[in-house]
Image (cartoon, rainbow, N blue to C red; front, side, top):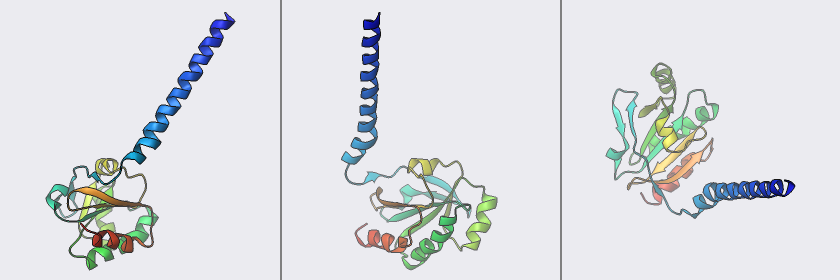
Length: 170
């Protein structure tokens, strides 16, 4: 019987090692092998002004999606910089995407920060599609609909970073 237990234990050890190796390949190795930009997921959201934001209709233009929430202190620091970039770069589309909040909360917040082009992602579907894990997150989508860059968290140089993407080719 002890021989059977020993073989079972070794088999389970081998199985555990295989599971760890598969996880490493899936979550560490394979993501690093993919080079170049990926196609942005489809985006169709209601906007604060009652319209619709459809990323597909922005094909041919550089688009920045700024994911934020009103409760997020780093977002409060970042939004004025992103909005300044928006105002000083009229050839680029900057869309502010509120994530997970009701319109009644978003409207006064957007007014306080003088935000235009605010899209609403109340069920966080678009944020999840872009892999947003923290706020703020800014995602750059080029004229062909590919994700070119993204920044997670507060970045005091966000305007410069966005400008670099804007001048490096759309």
